Amino acid sequence: MNRMWIGLAGLALLAGGLAACGGQPTTACTPKDKAVVVCVNGKPIDFSTAKNGPHKHEAGSIYAPVEQLAGALGVDIMVDPGGKTVTVNGQKVQVVGVPGAMGVHVHSQEIFVPVREFARAAGLKVDVDDKKGIAGIAK
Image (cartoon, rainbow, N blue to C red; front, side, top):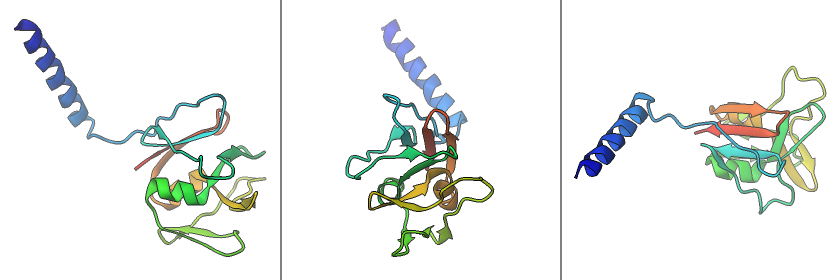
């Protein structure tokens, strides 16, 4: 009987702790097998339907296929036919002040966007560790 009460008390403390935190989603993201990984609320996005997954470029930014990224985030996108401009929820995705950054680009017939700028244009919180190849987005 005492074990049951201790278990219930632990659950109550856990629930209280979560409520105190406001139940905010996390941007935490863990790399796997040295691959570049993009997560939403701590869970990796599955890019297996893309020809190529997320990758880094020389400027250090992390890029992901726009169709899969938008689908995972549940946001509306518009892409120009040349693949040079992407808007998310009406906001243009662009890289400003990062020398050597590629911005929106076509790679192996897929359109890639910089994850940090895409998430910010969508109005979402994002944490990126370019060196480790990790991008975490909170919805």
